[in-house]
Length: 209
Image 1: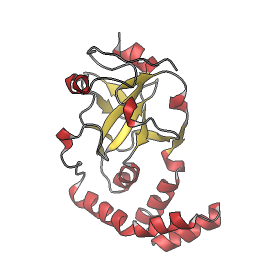
Image 2: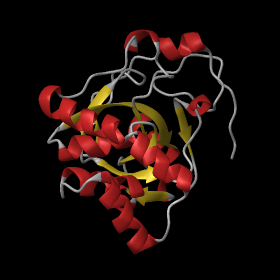
Image 3: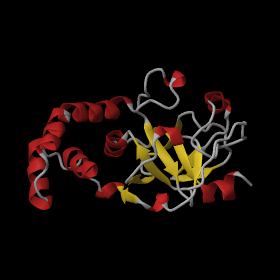
Image 4: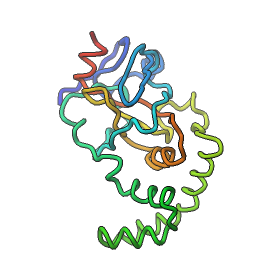
């Protein structure tokens, strides 16, 4: 993969993982995303954008690290993802917030269908069960709340982060998985996210031209 640093400001994206932080703040081209497709005009790459909660079609198997934020990347990485509905997180959230099962019952059902879960993972589910329940209730009552100090923390918050595929679809890169799924079941139409990596084919076809 041919990546190289860019030491000058570009109008839209950086090519390569190394760029000046001042350049990052200088980029001001906004993405407006509807139903998973990037549309115009472009105005802000690194600010929070709002997308339909059902527009993220999958989650990366191996997401890009934070140092790749703002890059356009070639290759078949945009085809190496798992559909949201096929993830274990979706299974647990669906059974909890749609089917109304208690957490221990969901764990039991999952193990009958898919095999035994690791002890540490079962403990993690139970440890965070109240947190998930509270999140669902909060989303139903108040909608989304963004990370604190959002304007001062462009890259290192726990907001949902998405990549744009060669055809302009959204796939999750890292963070925000539970909140993305729970927001769907809570009836939240729009969720906040951050744009991370754009496929080079989309960049060359839709942005660079």
